Length: 468
Image (cartoon, rainbow, N blue to C red; front, top):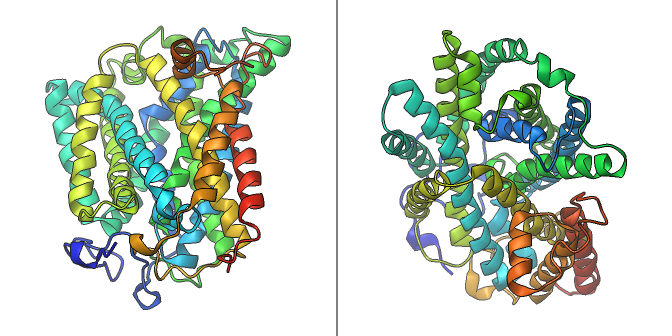
């Protein structure tokens, strides 16, 4: 596939260059690389300061968890470290290759990239919807506008950032990291002051049931961060190849764990006060009658724009990686529009069940995908010739990669607890979630999927002549 003819615009050439980025999945030439490695921290710090992370904290008091503060806090720490480590390893591939993450996985998947490419495109639309439910609700409270009008405002702004591209997103995240950090620091003091009942809450489950609840909660926290693995090198690919890989890794891990862990802990502190309400309603209720309430709603709206701009940008690259000949800027706009429609769906019905099920379903296929990509990368000695990856027609079949992904995903399903899995098991009779009762509903499907996919691909591809 020749993508040269699909460009609408040029590449950014320096920090602050806001010309429209027309380049899509092609590698960034070494002589066109630029930027400070420190921006890796802000690009991963800002987009997690969102209500979706706060909502994960609130889930601690849900009937299927009933986890206490200490156990919940430890689960948040463990889950975030596990997820962020995977994203950090992927982020190192950006400076090494100059390529975005899903397009780069053509190395392992070949033409079979169509499957994970389309899956991630759909996932980006899904994340758009989840985040926008909270963001539009906050903007509606702040301005008095109807939900749909507030949603439209957010979608237009985030789409604009994603269409301008890589540099616009980095610049926005850089400055909003400061703004949101200050806002949430103030809000943390106010919210923590309301947290007496949450901090005093004891674990509702004990013994093996308590262990199961801990593992499930850690899995939910991990899934929120692991989803970024598909985006990782998108935001480091413009860095020079000389950028220290260890710094790229640690700045990614720190950015993700500090931000997601911070906001999830805030939700955990006041989980008892949720009373079945959503994240935005809970925050607004706690701060009602103070000047901090509108500040919180503004922070939520800004955070939503930050995270969804990245969803739209990565979604556009994923669609190109799948082999569709569509300019990146058009694809980015399409993700934003479809995310708008998905938000309207999510805003009706039981968001708690949809959110928990969606998070776990995402992690079930992302970790086998990542297992294949990492196995391939390490088999190649963490380097590769990517000069022809943008040409879809010249790619190999990628059977080994797809087979490992599918097997890893299928083998992992009995070890899951997803609500989606329960519904699918009833409809098909397949042994999905089959081991959940024996495991006390400790969801380890994502770990099983990663290990199986990694190991199978290693065996299938180790002797391949394409390893270089």
